[in-house]
Image (cartoon, rainbow, N blue to C red; front, side, top):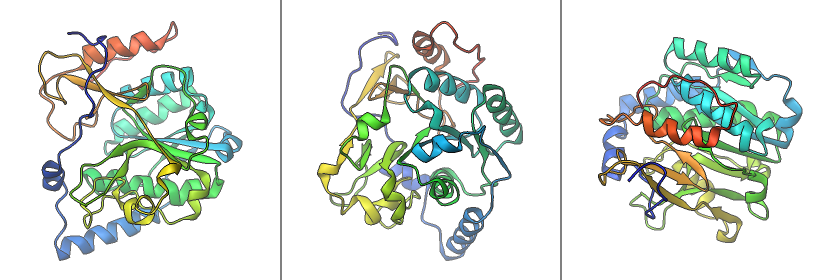
Amino acid sequence: MGASDAPEGENPPRISIAEWERLNRPPRREALLRYRWRTFRFLRTSAPVSELQGRQQAFRNAIVATVAFNRPDVIAWQIHLVRRYLAEHESYIVFDNSKKEEARDAIRDLCRRQHVPYVSLPRNRLVVSRSHGQALNWIVRNFMTGFGPKLFGFIDHDIFPTEPFSIRDRLEGKSLYGSVRHDTPTPGGWFLWPGFCYFDGSLLRRPLDFAPSYRFHMDSGGGNWPLLYRSIDPASVRFTQNSLLRFGEGDDQHEDFFMLVDGWLHVTNASNWRKQPVDRREHLVALLRQAGGPDQPDVKFEPI
């Protein structure tokens, strides 16, 4: 069965609770103090680079933030497909959380050439889910609140629109829209996957926390469970329809499938946080080219 086969399955591939806890063990007292200190410094450090390309007015209407991490090849395709399909593409901005200096240089150069707003985040000494979650907190506290957009949201760097899409239409009449996760032992617990989540701008007036929650055993985004999700009216939330897109012959959700999230193609694991034994470049490029149109970028992909 090839990459163009119809989507199948109900549940997208997620990290298991056991695997998340192995990678994100609650820090011991000394490590906890170090984590809190690093988080404190990170959230209060200004961006070393901020190049907004004159989009300030667009950011008052909406902010669609992607968090880049070491993959200029992935960001190049996301920029192209966001411009092609996303109604709010003028509100798209790249926040660079890369660990590698050469990756930051390449992503900044790409954004300059494509006239895409770019912000380099401060050096982030946190790891795995803590790094990503606190990057989102930095964006909210140091960027979004200054613009007060009518809507805002986050996408991962490895998720791509493949058909016309409007965030504003999906959020109409709702306060939240996104891909829900239930992979937590907390009774009744859920949170929006921060790789695809959008919010009414009025929620910026509330305290938000996109970091992992060790108390409630939730991955990045779970910090919002006690602050927002637990008490919100279910009628004000719209969840995505997620499915799996087969490209391999086996049944491993990481090695034989991509994810579809309301028409967005999600690769999973582009940052290589877990060992990926199968190189999925050929299948990914075939799908991106189907969606890319005649002016698609010529990008050499690293293993993915």
